[in-house]
Amino acid sequence: MKKDLLSIKDLNQEDIEYIFALAEGFKSGVGGFEKPLSGKSIGLIFQKPSNRTRVSFEVGIFQLGGNSIYLGFDDIKLGARESIKDIARVHSRYLNGIIARTFSHKDTALLAKYSDTPIINGLSDLFHPCQALSDIFTLKEKFGKLSSVTLSYVGDGNNVLHSLMYASALVGMDLKFSTPEEYGPREEIVEDVKKIAEATKSHIACYKTPEEAVKNADAVYADVWVSMGQEEEHKKRVDDFQGYQVNDELLSKAKKGAVLMHCLPAHRGEEVTASVLDGPASIVIDQAENRLHVQKAILVIYIGGKRKR
Ligand code: CP
Ligand code: NVA
Image: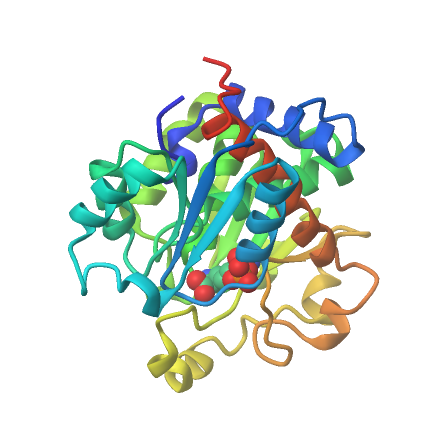
């Protein structure tokens, strides 16, 4: 495995299976590792707010015996008070690992370039790998064999969709998505994902309408229309995304018994209705819980020395 986890692209199918096996162990309480992060300090460089990512990483680090140091936007002023290169080189002398949440993926990649210590991407504008791994883990829990699952994503072609695309392709799961035309996922990522999907026989496809995208889906996924850092576009985006809301009517067009997924935070009345988010199909809190178990697996592998290869 690579030193860093910046994108799901850094993993292969075997790596994902290994992460899931460890996560299952943690979740069921038979993890079997005695404080593998004992004596280790892990920095959380967060340029953006966070609830799940911050709390689940800090709790996971604590449970594994390590020490977490939260460095928010105003603490180190990444790239403004001093260069990312200097921060990475200094932190390499103090820290055993860094979880980074940045505005620009380039900044996370720069941290990784100059850091000797592993960098784990806790969300960038391009990717959210820990989220997508937890989501696929949640689907595996619910449905078992991932190769017979169809996930549908409706909304913005953003960081969450990019990572779900890579994860689905790698595990051989089908992913159907629908976004407004000007808000599609990056072309180069779609092309790249399709190459991986060919090898695993996963079907990743874009549909013109949300209705077509949710047809035969086992799970329907919604994410915010306005991601962190895009607040100024709020009004335009809400207008542009009309028709892309996941509501009861849309969900009823998926497979009978289909589940509703959302990485949270959610905006009830925008990308998803309260009736769906708080209804019986919703598995959003399971997704949030699984962040903890999956990230503990990531922590022991990348920072705790439990590498498979
Ligand atoms: N899903 C997710 O990453 O949540 P936070 O932004 O609260 O960390
Ligand atoms: N797409 C969202 C995900 C939040 C977890 C954002 O980047 O703000």
